[in-house]
Image (cartoon, rainbow, N blue to C red; front, side, top):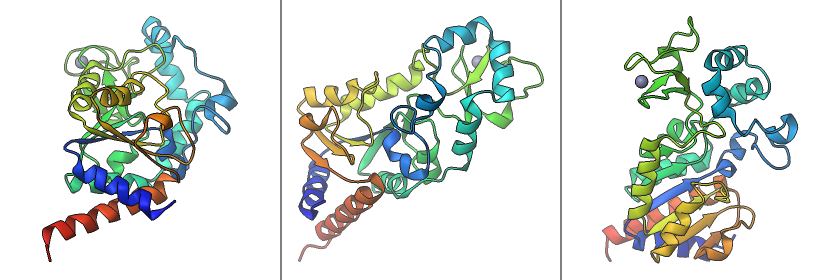
Amino acid sequence: MENDDIERAGRLILASKYVVGLTGAGISVESGIRPFRGPGGLWTEYGEPPMDGYQRFLAAPKASWERRVKREGYAEELHEALGKAKPNPAHYALAELEELKILRYLITQNIDNLHRAAGSKKIAEIHGNFSKLRCIQCNSRYETEEISLETLPPRCPRCGGVIKGDTVMFGEPIPIDVLKICQDETGKCDCMLLVGTSAFVYPAAGFPWGVKGREGMLIEVDPYETELTSSCNISLRGRAGEVLPRLVECIKVKLQEAESPL
Ligand SMILES: [Zn+2]
């Protein structure tokens, strides 16, 4: 990738008032996390989970928890991989952009907890976080170890509601608190940085179009062309772990230049 493209992206980001990131599976591939779909995908190998997974959970939460505790099917492989995965340079670069107060918010479709592990704090996990549990009644989140699994399904210590994994299942609505943050942040955003996502799955798919519809800018980081490429102002072709650290470096140099005028 040309330095010119990084330069242009850096200038565009610094000229923007409110930069929001949107990340998908592509950013975590370099951390050894298998994607769900496509070649080598978990669902390609094990079959897609039922489209009415959430309804099945609601109909029989105890049985669903028993399967989870026994780690049947691909869940075992997935959880083992997720538990071992470490953030890669792309995750750290986004955390640094937040620290520099350039990146205002990060919306991720990933459940792998790697953005938080890298230090990102302002983050909305639209599909939940595999390492957390959530009450389906009051949306309180809990660390896995906070909740006893002696009686299944576990109940919320705050409201007594049924607790499930925080990961959003097929057929399950995006938790309303997270969705509201995403809508608010996208509404303020005048430059969206898309990393490793084809933004194919709703609601994430709608966010870039919302920004675009208000004349905002879209910058894409992806090794491949995506559905969004033709709508992006800049497309940085390459692995996120390589491109994002270069972009952050470029932005830091520009910030220093701005601070010390000759
Ligand atoms: Zn609750």
